[in-house]
Structures are given as C-alpha cells and as structure tokens.
Image (tube, rainbow, N blue to C red; front, side, top):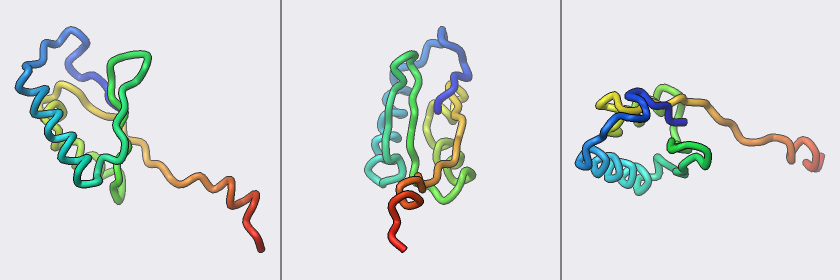
Length: 92
C-alpha cells in the first residue's frame, strides 16, 4: 500500500510520472505486479506483487522511479492463500 513521502502538495515532474508508469507496466508484463489499484478514498496505489518474500517485494518496489526519488513509499504486507474453504469442505 502506497504511503506518501513527499506530501500531498508535492509537484511531481511529468517525466517522472511517465517513467513510473512505464516501470509499472514493465513489472505487470513480467508478472511481478499481479494487480494494480487506486484507493477510492484517496489518491494512493495498492499493488499486489508476486514475490518470494517481503525483502524481494521491497527490492522490486525500489525500482519504481517515484520510490527511488523518495516521492512515495510502500507499506508491504505478506499475504497467504485463504485456507477457510479447505478447512470446511476438504474431503478426508
């Protein structure tokens, strides 16, 4: 989940925004970014990444130009598959 580093009033050059979009597209094409959203309540991104662990996710996010320039950062939360259906419906 994106967190602002520079503040809401920071003016981000168009070239940097274009570089960010290009890098995000490359990561999507490579299957690293699996899903990409903007929050509905404020202008920040939520990315779902396919990575081995939190450290790899942080390394990948560091390749985004806005992260590299310190404009934004990310909170990284590891996710695991939901086990509820298997617990309820698995056949012995």
